[in-house]
Every structure is written in structure tokens, then in C-alpha cells.
Amino acid sequence: MISEVHLKTKYIDSEGNKECGSHYSLAKQIARNTATQNRIAYLRSFSMNRQQIDALVKQMNIDTAKGQVDARVQQIVVRLLGDLFQAIEDLDIQPSEVWKGLEYFTDAGQANELGLLAAGLGLEHYLDLRADEADAKAGVAGGTPRTIEGPLYVAGAPETVGFARMDDGTETGKIDTLIIEGTVTDTDGKIIENAKVEIWHANSLGNYSFFDKSQSDFNLRRSILTDADGKYVALTTMPVGYGCPPEGTTQALLNKLGRHGNRPSHVHYFVSAPGFRKLTTQFNIEGDEYLWDDFAFATRDGLVATAVDVTDPVEIQRRGLDHAFKHITFNIELVKDAAAAPSTEVERRRASA
Image (cartoon, rainbow, N blue to C red):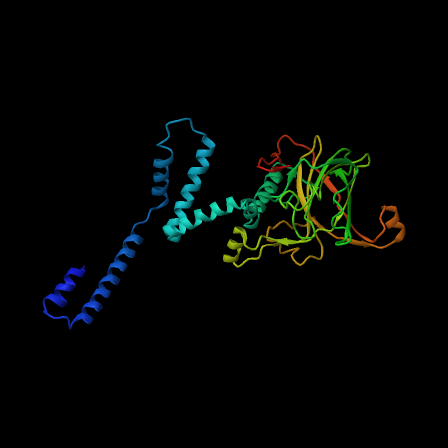
């Protein structure tokens, strides 16, 4: 390989003058280009196959163990590292890109957006699809479809029987009143009394209480136990769709992927009862422009609700209101516990007021 020293000797020292500087500069650039090409060729030649990667990961993360090992954690870490190293090889991911990725996850964690990211990249929906498949293999069928929980549940909402008013009145007159009601039954249509129906949704600005400190505690969050007829009724306000924080880490990544970060108007549910499998679900509201373009992939067949305008004075009076309102019926079917079925309880960190 031609070195810069050789070039200086050839084009300056041997000629004894500086008139060949342009020749020297050209040759110097050629040498640099050659060095770069050789380095690229070397890097491309330095690659590991999967067997070598797995051996390296084992050497660093299994063979070095001296204390008690959590076998499940070790199994997962080793597999994920192997897949990551393979991706680095296959995609020629550069060190600066690796560190930018690590910095991204640091920023997302500090912004408390990892739960939002899990929904936006489809991870949470994928887990639902796997759960559906596991149910099918276990012979579990029927019931209201599951869908994602999202990151905004808060434990400890006020609990009532049969009926609850969910809003604190601060948006009265600013947004439509909504009544949600339904019946909880098993898959044979038998009513389930004292089923716990936990409901939460956003306000007119697309914000959730607890996370939005301007709202009162548990605004638009309630737990309703079904009455003797298996019914629940929630008096609340019409939720609106919303998007990811525009300057947040989730939206920043979605921008790189050419994707939007919007959700349609929706209402979240946990539904549970002794002897039945816990249901995590939500309904999205018909007519929203993002109904079937939900960035979190939560819309599913059977989970689309229609908000009906109610203007009949008799019905308005019967509901104890003095103005028109919107009405949604959302009935829920729970599936009985089965020994062979996988658990529907998901352990994860959740907010608690």
C-alpha cells in the first residue's frame, strides 16, 4: 500500500521542489481512498455466523457466571443478545447507531414513554395475538375480544354498584354527555352479578387524570360492580381521539418510520368476576377517522361501538338529565376459568393513586 511518507518522498523530496504539490495532493487522496476501501473490505470480511455469535454470547454471559443464575432470565438475555448481534452483522449497524439506539431508550424511559412505544410499535398487539392463539390451542372460545391495555391505567378508582358518574363536572357544557351501559354475561348468556367493570378514558383534550395534573383525582375513572341484572351504567363525557406527545420520543421514532401517532376515540375496560377469566379490552367509537388506522393497533372486530344521539325529552328526563346526550351500549361476555387455559393476568408495573 502507498503511504503518505512514500508520497512525500516521491513527489517532493525526490523532485526537490514544491511544484508537484498538486500531484502530491492527488496521490494523497488516492491513498486515503485506497485505505478507506481496504478498511471497508476488511470490516466486511470480519463477520460472524450465528454459531460463532452464539458461542461468543455464551462465553460472555453464561461461562462467566459465578453466582446463582435465574435460568429463565439467562435464557431470554442470551437469545435476545444473539439476535441483536446477528442484526448488527446482517445490517452492518455501526457503533454510533448502536449508541444512538441506547440513548433513545434512555430518553424514552426518562420520559415514561416505553409503554406508549410498546403499543405504537405493535408489541402489545402482538402479545394479544399470541394470547388468542394460546387460547385457541387450549380450546378456549367465545367471549368479548381482548385488546391492548395501554400505559394509562391507574389502580384504586372509586367503586360503586350498578351506576357511576365518572366525570367531575368541569367539562359540562363543553363536550357531549355520554352514557355507556351494558350487561355482563357468560358465554351462555347467563348474567354475572357483582362483576367488576373498571372503566377509564381521556377528557376533551385527550388527556388522562393522574398523568394530567390539571384534572381531579380519578376523573373519568371508575369501578362499577354489576347489579342483580348483570348491568352497569356509566354517566360520563364523550372521549376524543388523541396523538402521542408531538415532541416525545415515541412520535420521534414514528416520524422516522413515516407513521402517525394518532388514536381514535376509545374507552378502556378491565372486567373480572370470580370463576371467570379477566378481560382486558376497549371499544373504539364508530365515525372516528382513525378507527381502522389506530397507531396502537387496538381496533378489532367486535370492539367498535356506535354513539347514538338521544334527543327524546322523555328519555332525557328518565336519565336525570336536562339536555341531549350520546348513548353507547357495550355488552360484555366473560369466559369461565379453565385449568388448561393460560392466565389472562398480566404482571406489569401500573400507576396507583
